[in-house]
Length: 409
Image (cartoon, helix red, strand yellow):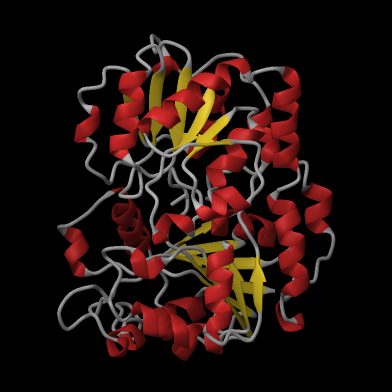
């Protein structure tokens, strides 16, 4: 079986989203995977960040092979980028963006052995119409994992494009109940609510030594691991930090938002991005996991992977009351506003017993990517199901924190 997955992040970065975990299971199930990201444009030679630099590297190399050659990774270069810019923000550009690639994307894909994949897997950041129109495939899946139209840099034409995509693909996977309702309202053929999950085993282990950059950071420590983006409630975080001067707040992830309100808080440590493989060590050295997100239509549709990972590490969790977070049934504390958030964090100091820790880890074990994959596998059209049945079940004890397999929640 051959799977073409178009995801937002190039492989190997500090963030790991659901697609990374699903790709690992496709590979375990005997499939060949083409992992594509982007596309990039000539503008990215001048306007870059860590992600676009990784994509440019893939383009310059003509792609790369990972996992003993069973995964092909690539980011195309287009001269007609679909962007929220005048003349570029249209469905016409969205349909043509992969035809204006150099070298031609379809030809490069064919040389890599993916001229006609069995399964076309797309997420909101993919060139959706260009893929559906230009890449022959047996079956298609759209993983609706965000309220993407609410992002400030999303092209205005996205809402109409998403509606068309939902009607055309064979299966829509919705990671939040609100997204499931939206997909059904758009007239999708088949919709499956498939929330995010975790690989609990690596997080449950306790490393002998804590990360060196936590030296001198006093305890208790509240850790946030994920993108430091516009959805992070920086004002709430600053207020909570001022109210809890004995706590240290450790923020891990790429910085994409204005964090200036935190500069006056000496107990806030912004570490920036760290390798995903190192994340269990940081959680093991923490006393609580936090999800201080703003409350908005965008965040109400987020099903945060980090909550499962915090629980797998046995950490008490404090989060703002987003709709999907409330509904997921995790053993956590919900708090809105800096005063309530600080009080909830302080109360976790009395909730660190073994029984509470075991309950959190049991919750994580009930929500693994292996379980989600088996549900997905059963829902795929027959023509797009991996043929090596049972492979994932046999290998489920193996750690999944692999640098080549993998991402904003």
